[in-house]
Length: 87
Image (cartoon, rainbow, N blue to C red; front, side):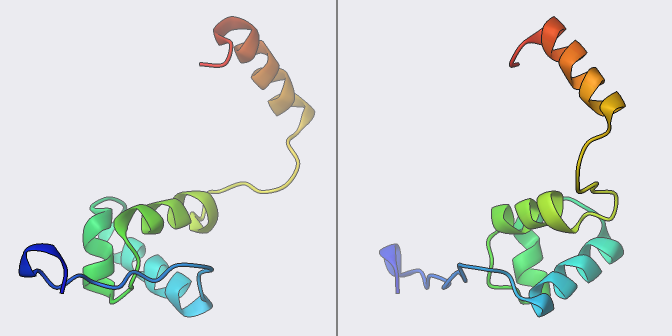
C-alpha cells in the first residue's frame, strides 16, 4: 500500500521483451497512437505510458528509418540548422 491507502502498481523497468513489443505493436495497430497511459492498463503491460510512448516512437514505429542518412538528408539538416540553429 502506498500513500493515502492507495495500492501502488509495480512498474516493470529495464529492457523490453519480445512479448512486450508484440503487445504494444498489436495495441497500436488496433487502437492507434495516443492515450499512452491507458496502454499499460489495457494490454497488461507493467510499463507506464511514457515508457510505452518512447518505445513506440523510438524503436517500433513501422515508418522509422534506421541506419545512415543520405547526402541529401545531411544537406537538408545543415541548411535548416543554418536557418534555425539548435531550436
